[in-house]
Image (tube, rainbow, N blue to C red; front, side, top):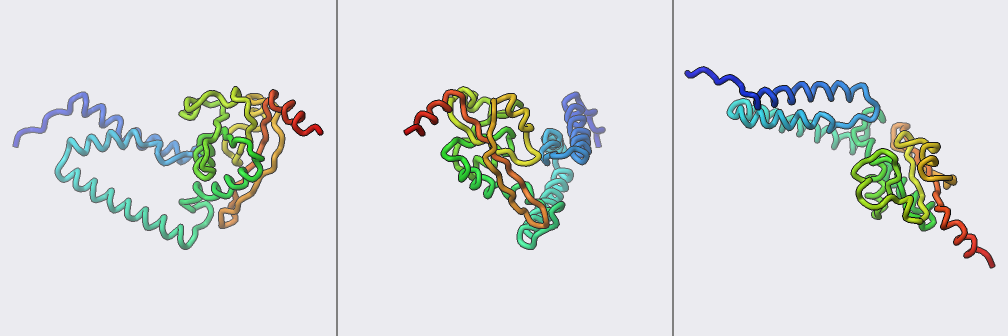
Length: 217
Protein backbone atom coordinates (compact mmCIF):
# COMPACT_ATOMS: atom_id res chain seq x y z
CA UNK A 1 0.00 0.00 0.00
CA UNK A 2 1.29 3.47 -0.78
CA UNK A 3 2.57 5.48 2.15
CA UNK A 4 0.17 8.06 3.50
CA UNK A 5 0.86 11.56 2.32
CA UNK A 6 2.29 13.94 4.87
CA UNK A 7 -0.31 16.40 6.19
CA UNK A 8 -0.23 19.75 4.46
CA UNK A 9 -0.55 23.19 6.05
CA UNK A 10 -4.35 23.08 5.87
CA UNK A 11 -4.56 19.77 7.75
CA UNK A 12 -2.06 20.93 10.36
CA UNK A 13 -4.06 24.13 10.87
CA UNK A 14 -7.26 22.15 11.31
CA UNK A 15 -5.61 19.75 13.73
CA UNK A 16 -4.21 22.57 15.86
CA UNK A 17 -7.55 24.40 15.90
CA UNK A 18 -9.65 21.34 16.77
CA UNK A 19 -8.83 19.32 19.89
CA UNK A 20 -6.56 21.96 21.53
CA UNK A 21 -9.26 24.61 21.16
CA UNK A 22 -11.99 22.32 22.48
CA UNK A 23 -9.81 21.22 25.41
CA UNK A 24 -8.83 24.80 26.32
CA UNK A 25 -12.34 26.27 26.33
CA UNK A 26 -13.82 23.22 28.07
CA UNK A 27 -11.25 23.58 30.85
CA UNK A 28 -11.75 27.36 30.98
CA UNK A 29 -15.53 26.94 31.25
CA UNK A 30 -15.12 24.60 34.21
CA UNK A 31 -13.57 27.46 36.23
CA UNK A 32 -15.57 30.40 34.85
CA UNK A 33 -18.91 31.40 36.41
CA UNK A 34 -21.55 31.88 33.74
CA UNK A 35 -19.72 29.78 31.15
CA UNK A 36 -21.80 28.62 28.20
CA UNK A 37 -21.69 25.33 26.29
CA UNK A 38 -21.01 26.90 22.90
CA UNK A 39 -17.58 28.28 23.86
CA UNK A 40 -15.66 25.32 22.32
CA UNK A 41 -17.72 25.50 19.09
CA UNK A 42 -14.89 26.86 16.86
CA UNK A 43 -12.84 23.78 17.69
CA UNK A 44 -15.69 21.46 16.78
CA UNK A 45 -15.97 23.14 13.38
CA UNK A 46 -12.36 22.22 12.65
CA UNK A 47 -12.95 18.69 13.96
CA UNK A 48 -15.90 18.22 11.61
CA UNK A 49 -13.75 19.22 8.63
CA UNK A 50 -11.03 16.80 9.72
CA UNK A 51 -13.56 13.98 9.98
CA UNK A 52 -14.93 14.81 6.54
CA UNK A 53 -11.42 14.60 5.09
CA UNK A 54 -10.63 11.37 6.94
CA UNK A 55 -13.89 9.70 5.90
CA UNK A 56 -14.48 5.95 6.16
CA UNK A 57 -14.25 4.32 9.59
CA UNK A 58 -13.38 7.57 11.40
CA UNK A 59 -16.49 9.30 10.12
CA UNK A 60 -18.77 6.35 10.91
CA UNK A 61 -17.33 6.04 14.44
CA UNK A 62 -17.77 9.76 15.08
CA UNK A 63 -21.35 9.73 13.75
CA UNK A 64 -22.24 6.75 15.91
CA UNK A 65 -20.70 8.28 19.02
CA UNK A 66 -22.39 11.61 18.36
CA UNK A 67 -25.82 10.01 17.96
CA UNK A 68 -25.36 7.95 21.11
CA UNK A 69 -24.29 10.95 23.19
CA UNK A 70 -27.09 13.11 21.78
CA UNK A 71 -29.67 10.42 22.60
CA UNK A 72 -28.30 10.04 26.12
CA UNK A 73 -28.36 13.80 26.66
CA UNK A 74 -31.95 14.04 25.40
CA UNK A 75 -33.03 11.30 27.80
CA UNK A 76 -31.34 13.03 30.76
CA UNK A 77 -33.00 16.36 29.95
CA UNK A 78 -36.41 14.71 29.50
CA UNK A 79 -36.15 12.85 32.81
CA UNK A 80 -35.03 16.02 34.62
CA UNK A 81 -37.90 18.00 33.12
CA UNK A 82 -40.49 15.43 34.22
CA UNK A 83 -39.10 14.22 37.54
CA UNK A 84 -37.16 17.30 38.61
CA UNK A 85 -33.53 17.51 39.59
CA UNK A 86 -31.44 19.11 42.35
CA UNK A 87 -31.06 22.83 41.64
CA UNK A 88 -27.34 22.55 41.02
CA UNK A 89 -27.81 19.73 38.50
CA UNK A 90 -30.96 20.91 36.73
CA UNK A 91 -30.09 21.19 32.99
CA UNK A 92 -33.12 23.43 32.44
CA UNK A 93 -32.42 25.86 35.26
CA UNK A 94 -31.11 28.55 32.92
CA UNK A 95 -34.45 28.77 31.11
CA UNK A 96 -36.68 28.70 34.18
CA UNK A 97 -38.25 31.75 35.79
CA UNK A 98 -38.04 34.13 32.84
CA UNK A 99 -41.73 33.89 31.91
CA UNK A 100 -42.76 34.95 35.41
CA UNK A 101 -40.14 37.70 35.45
CA UNK A 102 -41.39 39.09 32.15
CA UNK A 103 -45.01 39.08 33.32
CA UNK A 104 -44.10 40.88 36.54
CA UNK A 105 -42.07 43.45 34.61
CA UNK A 106 -44.97 44.16 32.25
CA UNK A 107 -47.29 44.60 35.22
CA UNK A 108 -44.84 47.04 36.86
CA UNK A 109 -44.00 48.95 33.68
CA UNK A 110 -47.02 51.25 33.63
CA UNK A 111 -46.80 51.26 29.86
CA UNK A 112 -43.07 52.04 29.76
CA UNK A 113 -40.90 50.08 27.37
CA UNK A 114 -38.94 47.23 28.94
CA UNK A 115 -35.13 47.38 28.82
CA UNK A 116 -32.26 45.09 29.76
CA UNK A 117 -28.52 45.55 30.19
CA UNK A 118 -27.41 41.95 29.56
CA UNK A 119 -27.84 39.99 26.35
CA UNK A 120 -29.29 36.92 28.10
CA UNK A 121 -31.96 39.01 29.83
CA UNK A 122 -32.61 40.83 26.55
CA UNK A 123 -33.41 37.59 24.75
CA UNK A 124 -35.32 35.84 27.52
CA UNK A 125 -37.46 38.79 28.60
CA UNK A 126 -38.05 39.81 24.99
CA UNK A 127 -39.24 36.31 24.11
CA UNK A 128 -41.83 36.17 26.88
CA UNK A 129 -42.83 39.82 26.68
CA UNK A 130 -43.37 39.40 22.92
CA UNK A 131 -42.16 42.95 22.34
CA UNK A 132 -38.90 44.67 21.34
CA UNK A 133 -36.72 45.21 24.41
CA UNK A 134 -34.35 48.17 24.59
CA UNK A 135 -30.70 47.34 25.18
CA UNK A 136 -29.05 49.67 27.70
CA UNK A 137 -25.84 47.77 28.42
CA UNK A 138 -22.48 49.48 28.03
CA UNK A 139 -20.82 46.38 26.60
CA UNK A 140 -21.22 46.32 22.82
CA UNK A 141 -23.03 43.30 21.42
CA UNK A 142 -25.23 42.48 18.45
CA UNK A 143 -28.09 44.27 20.19
CA UNK A 144 -26.10 47.53 20.07
CA UNK A 145 -26.73 47.69 16.31
CA UNK A 146 -30.44 46.85 16.24
CA UNK A 147 -31.66 50.40 16.67
CA UNK A 148 -30.51 53.85 17.83
CA UNK A 149 -29.37 54.22 21.42
CA UNK A 150 -32.58 54.06 23.54
CA UNK A 151 -31.25 56.90 25.72
CA UNK A 152 -31.86 59.23 22.78
CA UNK A 153 -35.40 58.04 22.15
CA UNK A 154 -36.95 60.19 24.88
CA UNK A 155 -39.19 57.38 26.12
CA UNK A 156 -39.51 56.07 29.69
CA UNK A 157 -38.00 52.65 30.33
CA UNK A 158 -38.37 49.93 32.92
CA UNK A 159 -34.97 48.27 33.23
CA UNK A 160 -35.22 44.58 34.16
CA UNK A 161 -32.18 43.48 36.19
CA UNK A 162 -31.86 39.74 36.90
CA UNK A 163 -29.68 39.03 39.91
CA UNK A 164 -26.13 38.21 38.84
CA UNK A 165 -26.54 39.34 35.23
CA UNK A 166 -25.37 42.68 33.95
CA UNK A 167 -23.95 45.85 35.49
CA UNK A 168 -24.65 47.18 38.96
CA UNK A 169 -27.16 49.95 39.62
CA UNK A 170 -24.32 52.43 40.00
CA UNK A 171 -23.03 51.53 36.55
CA UNK A 172 -26.51 51.77 35.06
CA UNK A 173 -27.07 55.21 36.57
CA UNK A 174 -23.71 56.39 35.27
CA UNK A 175 -24.89 55.39 31.80
CA UNK A 176 -28.58 56.33 31.91
CA UNK A 177 -29.01 58.85 34.71
CA UNK A 178 -31.10 58.63 37.91
CA UNK A 179 -33.17 55.46 38.29
CA UNK A 180 -36.12 54.90 40.60
CA UNK A 181 -36.97 51.63 42.31
CA UNK A 182 -40.00 49.98 40.72
CA UNK A 183 -40.19 46.77 42.72
CA UNK A 184 -39.17 43.32 41.62
CA UNK A 185 -40.07 39.66 41.87
CA UNK A 186 -38.53 36.45 43.19
CA UNK A 187 -39.39 33.34 41.19
CA UNK A 188 -38.88 29.87 42.72
CA UNK A 189 -37.10 27.48 40.37
CA UNK A 190 -37.51 24.31 42.42
CA UNK A 191 -35.09 22.59 44.75
CA UNK A 192 -34.77 25.74 46.84
CA UNK A 193 -33.30 27.82 43.99
CA UNK A 194 -34.78 31.16 42.99
CA UNK A 195 -34.34 33.75 40.26
CA UNK A 196 -34.59 37.35 41.46
CA UNK A 197 -35.49 40.33 39.29
CA UNK A 198 -35.19 44.01 40.21
CA UNK A 199 -37.04 46.71 38.27
CA UNK A 200 -35.61 50.21 37.84
CA UNK A 201 -37.58 53.00 36.23
CA UNK A 202 -35.84 55.48 33.92
CA UNK A 203 -37.66 58.71 33.10
CA UNK A 204 -35.96 60.90 30.46
CA UNK A 205 -35.48 64.49 31.60
CA UNK A 206 -37.76 65.78 28.84
CA UNK A 207 -40.57 63.43 29.87
CA UNK A 208 -40.76 64.46 33.53
CA UNK A 209 -42.27 67.99 33.02
CA UNK A 210 -44.81 66.57 30.58
CA UNK A 211 -46.02 64.02 33.10
CA UNK A 212 -46.24 66.65 35.84
CA UNK A 213 -48.17 68.98 33.58
CA UNK A 214 -50.57 66.25 32.61
CA UNK A 215 -51.18 65.40 36.27
CA UNK A 216 -51.90 69.02 37.21
CA UNK A 217 -55.66 69.92 37.56
